[in-house]
Image (tube, rainbow, N blue to C red; front, side, top):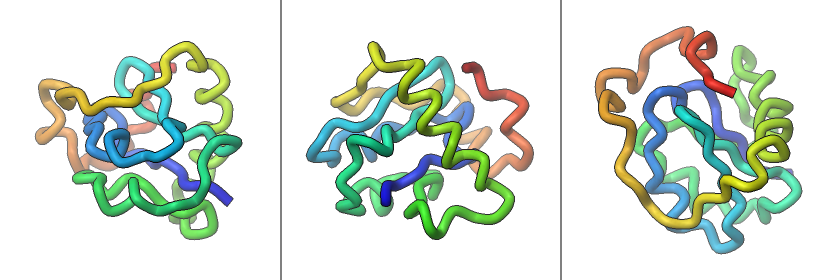
Length: 109
């Protein structure tokens, strides 16, 4: 089992979670982060560090976000050269976007 980044990360991209990951399993796109499920060791350190509450254990992903399980795996492979291991500033409007519903349409793959 792995952890999954859900929709609230879109257009926020806080990276507090990346800083605590002992296996560096985070990958980044333009406006979203993903966790590579093949690399995640299910340590749960990232979940509590996410200021957007966008990280879930795979078996607790909200029903309306189940597509993010596959999306994390797919984008981790696509963004394989974009491994992120250190905290960066969030996107400029992150606080404005935190909690906005229906953000999936803004995901830049």
